[in-house]
Amino acid sequence: MKTRAFVFVSIAAGLLVACSSIGLLGTRPSTCDATGNKCKATITVTACNQAGISATPDTIVVKPGKWKIEWTLATPGYSFTSDGITMKPGAPGGVFSNGNKDAPQKFSMDDDHKGPSTAGSFKYNVRVVDGSGNVCKYDPTVDNDA
Image 1 (tube, rainbow, N blue to C red):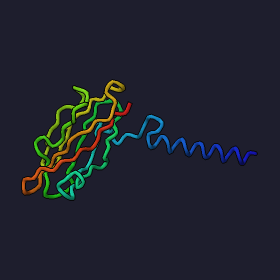
Image 2 (cartoon, rainbow, N blue to C red):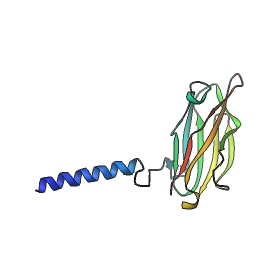
Image 3 (tube, helix red, strand yellow):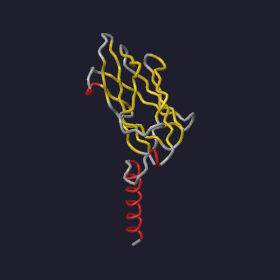
Image 4 (cartoon, rainbow, N blue to C red):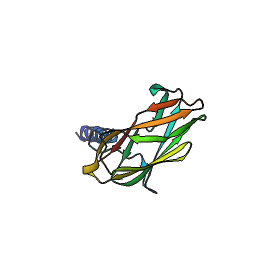
């Protein structure tokens, strides 16, 4: 009987951890570093189209607080446009601000996530330009977790 109880508890604990880690229990681990309140993402380009651009992480998970999101373009020969990162319509006003092209391959933006009132999944635009002047676009997500 003790063995069955142990097995049941072990399986239940494993499922709880698994569900929590993929967000089925309402919270997910942040992809941000609390040291310095920075969230970082890397943009990689293999082709100048939606399928040829990726972000790691593709979804930036942000817990409540004041954060600076920093994007680094990892592919030589590409740079951010002056409006390299912009939030798509639907993002709450006053939460995402100060979008700035810090360097040709660096872009940053502030996320003032106040909690449940600013929680949600918000798509954003990534715009980079190749050496020939072609603008390449991609649209990943920022999740302001509750």
